[in-house]
Every structure is written in structure tokens, then in C-alpha cells.
Length: 333
Ligand code: FAD
Image 1 (cartoon, rainbow, N blue to C red):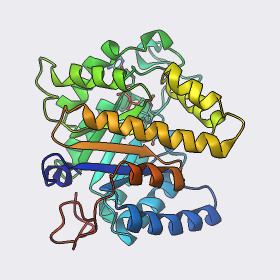
Image 2: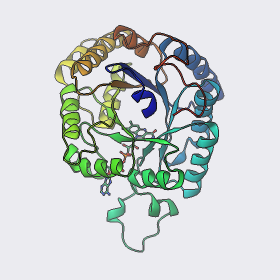
Image 3: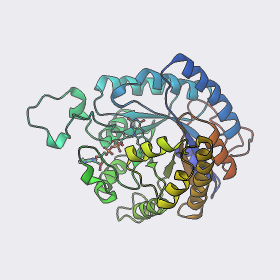
């Protein structure tokens, strides 16, 4: 991914699309057809495949990564969480990802089960499963990947423009609280930062400025890719912003609430809103390359309309000449 970003002409915009593995075979077939369509018509720089916390979707995530990377030739970023995962499963996943030609990983902690306590709070001698001794935070996974695979994988980590929040420690939700740990993740070898979804462009702008100007100098040029979720309906919007602790600016909320009972109207307003957000982000002029990550929820229409409207779809150029063309082979990062 970072090689592809670096190869883009200065000022070029790019985008990635995120998919989760469907539960059923029928769902998988539907997604397969949709991915073929979307990859041809939209031409993302890369796609992301999510991972169920604790490894709950391990085989399905790997099957989807096989489809996107190996069969469709799309540069794929496989998400991988590390808490409540056995070291064996992490090892097997990394080996299988490599065997499939996946060169990009998003190294995540994952959400602990509700009952679990933070490692810092555990009673000494309390029984822990093997995974938690080695993998308490995402940085542990970044270090592990680097120690076992060197530079083979391009590694991304999560960033939170409005701060990360855990149910167990909601009082910690602040960008300042997360900052030292983001520093750790990048110092440990992360290549790019992909953010939590947000609708508050000013919060994102403050976040990126804070990172770019950080004394460590670690964030001067690292790609920071904003996470955007198209609005599918009112309930999903409220639920996903609540779960991710993303604020909804008043003007956005009012526009959606005005049509909340009409899903089609919500989607249309949502396309307007997301397109405005993308244009505002483009105008920030804080980096040479501007990337946009879309949480698609495996849906096609809204994201296609936003990409079209914001002129983000690259023209199709022959694969060898194209800086934004699709992966030329399974080994490409
Ligand atoms: P960390 O970077 O470890 O941080 C977690 C929290 O702990 C932060 O509040 C941080 O400040 C704090 N912290 C970090 N290190 C320490 C330390 N040493 N001491 C004390 N506090 C510390 N989840 C999934 O299950 N599957 C996915 O596919 C998935 N994809 C995601 C994609 C993106 C782009 C994002 C932003 C999130 C994704 N998540 C996914 C959610 C993620 O797993 C959760 O938000 C999780 O709670 C935190 O993961 P992290 O990697 O940010 O953790």
C-alpha cells in the first residue's frame, strides 16, 4: 500500500474500500459478484477485509482475502486483531496471509469481551489465556509482525480523530490519551494510519495537524487515511456513531433527521453529506496525497455515487503504465 501511495503523482487522490466476510455461502457469492463489479467500475487503490474480534471470522476473512488478493488481483489489506486470540491462530493467519500473496495488514487490538479487564487492572496470578500475555495492545502485534516477518508486510494501525473509547474506560476518550500509544505503534514499525469513522471534519483536521506537528517527527509523512462511512439509514448512522464514539455535528444530524423515516431520502442526503466531507478534506491541503477509506458495509450504491460525484474514480490505464492501476500480481504491496 505505501509503495502504491508513493507511486501516485503528487496531489493525486486515492481511496480504499472495506468489506466484511459474509456469514453464508449465498452472501459470499453475492459479495463476489459485487466485488467484481466494484473493482472494475470503481478501481480502488486497495481493499480491506475485516477480522472478527477474537478470530471469530478467521477462516471467512482469509477466504475473502483469498478472493480479493489472489483471485481478483486487488491489493488487499487484511485486518488482524490480537487480544483473545491464541498465538497459534495469529501465527497461522500470518503464514496463510503470506501464502495468499497478501502484503498488507491492519494490526489491531480488537475489542476485549465485555467482562474482560484491562491487563493493567488484572490481579497478579489471575488466570489468563496464552494470547493475553503476549498481546495486550495493538503495538504488541506490530512488534510481533516486524520481528517475525521483517518488512515483508506493510503494516497499518488504527487512529482515532476523536479519541478511542472502551466501555470499561469511557473516561479515557481523548486524542491526548491515545497519542503516546500511537507514537509507540508507529515507532514499532507501522507504515500508515487508518482512522475510525468520523463526520466532524474539524476534529479530523485538528487530529492530523497534531500528528503532523508532533515533536517526535514520526508523523511528518506517514499516510493518514480518513475513515468515512456512507449513510445507509438513520438507525445505522445512530448505531455506528454511538459504537465508534464519533460525534455527529448538529447540521448533519438535522439534515438526516428531517428525512429519517424515508430510507431512500436518507441515503440521498447521506451522499450529499459524504461528498461534502470528501470535498472539505480535499481542501485541507495537509498532505501531498489524499486518501479516503470507505466503510462500505458491503454495499455498493452510496459509495459509488460519492466516488463519482467527488471525481475519485481513477481512469483505467494499462496496468504497467498505471500508477493507480490495480495490483500487477499477488506479491505487490
Ligand atoms: P490499541 O492501539 O491497542 O489501543 C486501544 C486503547 O488502549 C486506546 O484507548 C489506547 O489509547 C489504549 N492503549 C494502547 N496501548 C496502551 C498501553 N500500553 N497502556 C494503556 N493503554 C493503552 N476491530 C475488529 O475486531 N476487527 C476489525 O477488522 C477492525 N477494524 C478496524 C479498522 C479501523 C480503521 C479502526 C479504527 C478500528 C477497527 N477495529 C476493528 C476496532 C478496534 O479493534 C477497536 O477500536 C479496539 O478497541 C482498539 O484497537 P486498536 O488497534 O486501536 O488498539
